[in-house]
Image 1: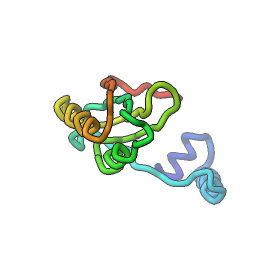
Image 2 (image 1 turned 90 degrees about the vertical axis):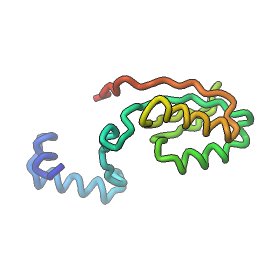
Image 3 (image 1 turned 45 degrees about the vertical axis):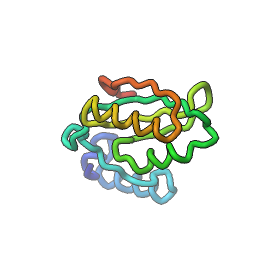
Image 4 (image 1 turned 180 degrees about the vertical axis):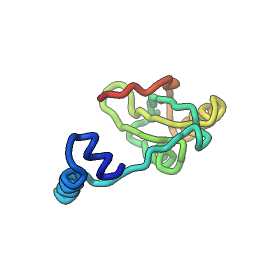
Length: 124
C-alpha cells in the first residue's frame, strides 16, 4: 500500500500517514510487514483446522519438527485445556489432508479432529 492509499484509508495526508507509520515502526509497535498469499494459486486451495491430542504431550518435539518443516502448516498453537494443539493447514486436496494427518500419527499423535474451513469471516 502506498502512503497515498494509506492516508486515504485513515483520513490523513500521504505525508502525515507516512510520518505516523514511521513513528510506529521506530517505537517497535510495527515489527514487520507480510505478504498476503493466494493459496489457491499456490496449489493449496483447501484450508483445514486440526485439533491434536498427543499420546504423551510431554514428548511434543517430534510433532513440532513436522510443524516447522511442513509447508502445508500455516499456524500452530500449543493450548491449555482438553486438547494439546490446534493447527491450521493449507492442502491441495482431501488426499493431501489425509497424508498430513498420517504424518502426525507417525510422531506420537493419538487423535485428530479436522474441519474444513469454508470461509474466513472478517473481524473488522
